[in-house]
Length: 375
Ligand SMILES: *Cc1c(COP(=O)(O)O)cnc(C)c1O
Image (cartoon, rainbow, N blue to C red; front, side, top):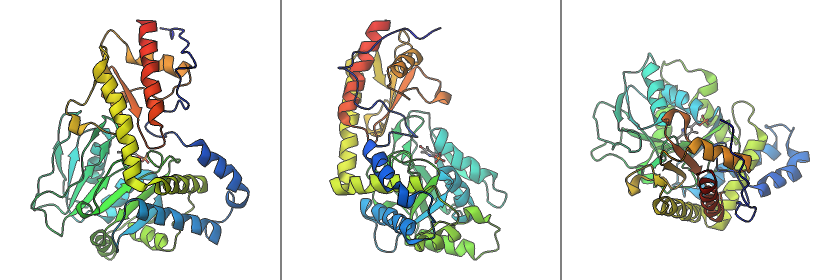
């Protein structure tokens, strides 16, 4: 079926039409700053002071944004969050991990550790999509893996150590789509890792891992053990390089620059509390709208589990979400399609800090316009 011809009046359109969950909107101010800095930055050595000071600003910007306690390290490497799962399989899990699995992304780290021949089979606790399971202390495991925000379903959970866990057990949190948009407490976490193409409004390809002293000790102990680790995902090598404001191999300099720009923008405006409040505002706009109109409902039934950085909105069968997304796209509003493998009649909309809450409100008005035009 061809896309119905609907022209959304320009008075309704958002100022910026990017609502994708990653890669996500990069602020035009950051791109302009990159263009200005480019002649002295892009195409220069990552071993020299100009780039190293930028990596240093990235590390200190992360430290400030999350108010990391003394002794925590910000570790960087290439390959994004997916590479970090492999790195953690080699360099953070001692013998057996426990994973909360409640969507596409949270299931993948569990698969990586299940496939590792040198680890025992992981414990996996699942829940139906659209919900999250809870952590339960298990004396057999040495690392708990959870996901702050499950990007495929729009379910968020607050990172927390399970009651009864011991100091020898680490809590590792995949915060790829949460970091910088949702609140968390360092006392509840040992490793908080992410990639910068979501809330940090940069490009992909980098992993950033905030590591507690206990996590650093684990990395150092496993590095000293007899386990073989490929150098490109060796966390000890990544840690040693990060301490010198470098990466083991060449990073994408534009990605580093844009990440620093977003971090400093958030820190200058009031830090994580400011950024998370902005996401709260966008979330209340879109969920209130979805509960008000008669053709939409928030997919996540429990309001406490509804993500404030990724909203998933089910549409009634009479309104085809794929068609709505196509018409929006033809009008310059992109990436509102649902997560493919979830297979629902749904729109998925990023509410990351770079996205203006007023643009979220404008998007709701545009969806109303499209639905009444095609209905
Ligand atoms: C996007 C995403 C990933 C994958 O990130 P890459 O950098 O593409 O590897 C992993 N986990 C979550 C929760 C994500 O949202």
